[in-house]
Length: 352
Image (cartoon, rainbow, N blue to C red; front, top):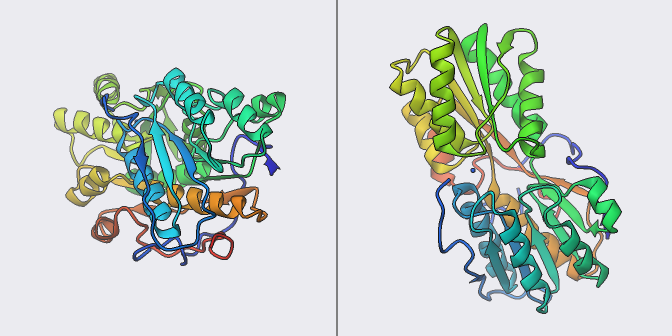
């Protein structure tokens, strides 16, 4: 297995789009059912026969609901049994760690993990990896220093290049507003994913736009609505709002509408959830940078199957992203939750 050496995935070059990932053609309210395990079923042969455990973030966010769909669909396709457990909410770090600990007492051939923070699962994962069980880290990277201190090695990291995703949003914001003042709404303070998206956005706008200090809305729509409302009141000349996820972007878009500034203040977010795609199509949201949690989940299962078969995995696997504006929103909705563009799947020749 390969060590997790960086808290952010390496850039793997241009995403081009094909392959086994295109399976059949390819942030938050609390949910009491979020922790319930689900089975992936059995279908065509191709899996190693050993079940896979997956621990993901809270299903109170549609992004992670879609990730679960990708995990289960690929498990069915590859003939792998999967048990998915999720945190009670997107901030439930302790509950997520407890779910991992419970699964670690059972017999699984590989673990797929999407930690809430960089270190909330590190100790449990280190114990799993020490038993020779592959750990596939998806979406939220484990903290490199914490992993090294615990002796944790992962088989691979699979996720979005969040700096690049932020850059796409920043470039589109410059195109949309031209010049002026923009607000930036981030997720949890200190979160590496939020920070990377904001970093990319800031790089892209450069000195063309003036960014206000980052406000943290904890990935939550209602908090973003409140923050954006205050920002619009304090800054009547505000031209745009960048939100680090779609839930917060939709909250900001609602604030813009409430202020009577629809069409005057651009709102761009990241994720590509279906409600955000529909908002882009309707013109409520200016754009979203779609990453594909379905693809991330699917790739996670493919990586586990390959790891169980003893195959060497790339240290980092970059999942696809695409800018969705009104002119392509219909295409993105038609293929959701699968990517609407093709991309090269580096695991296509490994898992099977």
